[in-house]
Length: 205
Image (cartoon, rainbow, N blue to C red; front, side, top):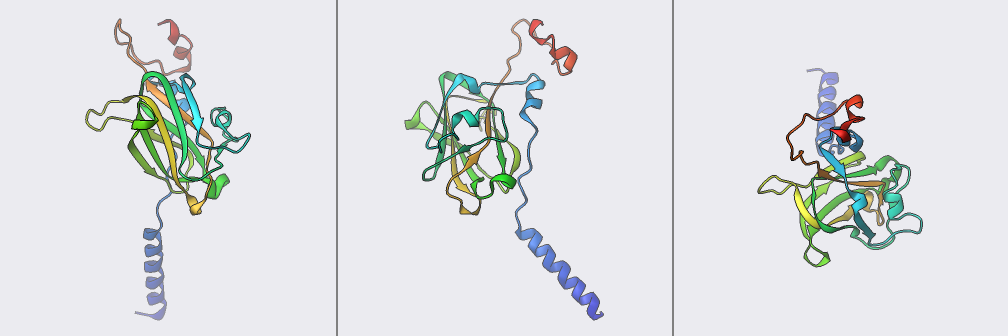
């Protein structure tokens, strides 16, 4: 084996070790608007009362829910940073969608998130914990009962940011969407309307 071949093998092995030691970036999910167009889910965030553990003035709930990916909630306190979503009645929830942008937010980007549900602040239980690596896009968090595989039914959801990238102190979240499954008609099951033409007339089926 020549010296050049030996060096080439060593370089390839080093590169492989580095590649294996570096965690893969969290892939983005589809735009939630695409999910809504399928007619299988509906966004219900407007039915809830939202509150935050802290926020910088001008970077609060309004920015978290304004459908603008350029704005964001910025916390202004100690970790964990909390988003509280409270419904007036028990509500079925299938999925959360969170938009995070590591390219823009860097150390403000969440790296570990806990999702908790319950009747109120006093009996919340964690049902999901998610670790993210440099996310840039929509993160889909499925909320299904582990025993029945059915969407959960709850009065309250709490999203807790447990850690940020680069050990950042405060956090940025740009948008949060909450989805409930769309129930089938009691008259009978109809095919889903997925094309633009059909969607125009979906409400009069």
